[in-house]
Image (cartoon, rainbow, N blue to C red; front, side):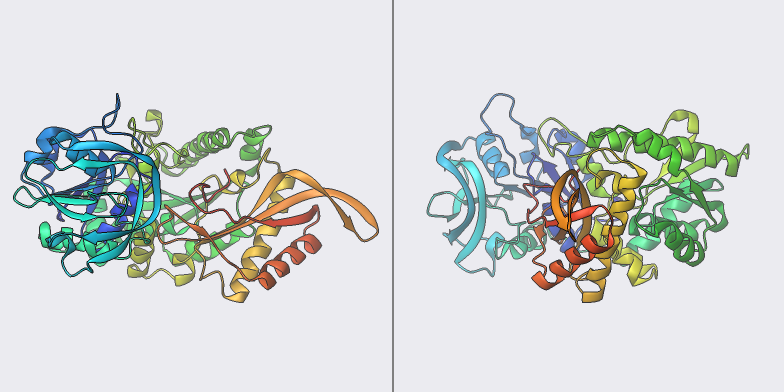
Amino acid sequence: MRDQHQLILILDYGSQFTQLIARRVRENRVYCEIHPFSLPAEEIRALQPLGIILSGGPQSVDEEGAASVDPALFDLGVPVLGICYGMQLMAYRLGGGIGRGHGREYGRAELEIEAESCLFAGLESRQTVWMSHGDHVTALPQGFRLLGSSASVPIAAMEHPERRLYAIQFHPEVSHTVHGSELLSNFLYGVCAAAGDWRIASFAGEAVARIQAQVGEGRVICALSGGVDSSVVAALLAQAVGEQARAIFVDNGVLRLGERAEVERSLGEGLKVPLTVVDARERFLSRLAGVTDPEAKRKAIGHTFIEVFEEEAERLLGARPGRRFLAQGTLYPDVIESVSVKGPSAVIKTHHNVGGLPERLGFELVEPLRMLFKDEVRQLGRELGLPEALVSRHPFPGPGLAVRVLGEVTAERVAVLQKADAIFLNELRESGFYAKTSQAFAVLLPVSSVGVMGDYRTYENVVALRSVDTQDFMTADWSPLPYELLGRVANRIVNEVRGVNRVVYDITSKPPATIEWE
């Protein structure tokens, strides 16, 4: 993809906001990729980036084993923007001073612009920014000049205009930095002279061409989940290779209520890709029996899926000659979160659709969405003409309700959660809040609580409701749903779902919590 678009390279130093930097860059219509901080300067040169961004990170630049940078990077003649840790690293490697603060500074601060710079062109001389750091630059490296300061950070922004090196202590990628988007735009267009050639509308044609080039006369099996990601992949396959593609939908026993019938109706008919539905509920649930660890659940489901997929693919393709491909809806955050490279973005959870398949399957992977973020996939779905109800559907985890049934997963517990979840989503749709929220679902907790129903004492299940608002799913706030709506949902669940006598609402943001409970 970088062959067709100008590239901004983001080096990851472990910030929780690294993916958010990438999203902000792409919102400015400039293509970017995240790479490990350890990427050698010669490999960076080979990528021919338009500019480089050094992300924030949790370490101190002068501590033993701290994530560093190839010093030759600053001599490539490519514009560099250091953010937070990236600023400290730039200063440290180029001879500046680094000091410890009295404590971490986390939150809003007022930035005073001390000198004119293309980085702050058109922006107010005093602006609100978001700080998140413990260390700071105490002395400018040789040739640098001061651009901005705050009450607690005398050097909050600096530049070496001749070498096109820029650095800021705050985070322009978060929404709390009022003019952060404009600052990034100034770097991309004012410093790097970007052409702004990244468009989802043009991506569709590029993706179709790449699939055709990769697949040739081969056969493709699409692992269809019913969500927007795999549906978009199926739509691309339909355009790219037509009847050479087959879609397989596996009923793993941990789907949402009515999911299988909905997939057969809307996707089997609408996408014009031959669809095979496999009923593997008993096999999956037997593999989940007694399993309570979230990672163990994910791995059990992943391994079982491969087994089922291998059997069905063999039945469909048999001994037909030619290359064989598996198409799946892997997204860029899946790739990033599943890779841990000593320091950068730590592995938060294993993604079922990232990684190699057993070699015995003889399949090559087709992952046309691998470099896209979720909102970009939704835009692509609209470009491909998929119905809005499908494109705007809330995300659903690959392991399904297995990671929303906390504790052991049984058919009985799944049935309870399916009904409660369906009530919650139905009420959200009826009230108009489904489209206003980003992801909502119910969770069955591994605890029971005492209740009174009628004249009887009960000791039954607890259901937690979770709804979040987010632009990128990397950070999220809980949804302030109306009390009346929450009350109606709780009342319906307790009255209509046998085995539940208490409903609670999760009001934790991400971070510190993840969106899913497991």
